[in-house]
Image (cartoon, rainbow, N blue to C red):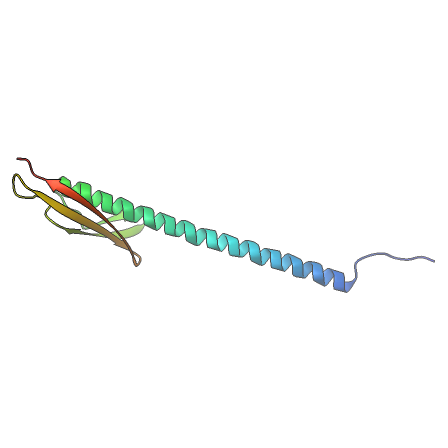
Length: 112
């Protein structure tokens, strides 16, 4: 008697189901990774913006905004960039972009 061996329809459907579940898991992991990478880039831009704001303030040319990786970053400065001679001023620079912000505070002194 001749018996033909092969996959049944049920076995094939189970294999397709398992492949679809694995594809969904891989897609979810890649999507999650891309969102986290995007957040890291944004945070890096905010830190760069605040740091640049402090440096520009110390140089006497305050910034209002920068562009980092195609992301516009708004910069606000609180405090005196050029304090009165013989005094110091605490300066806080806040960088804002896409509903996130980052602040740095530094002391700027004028020893003229």
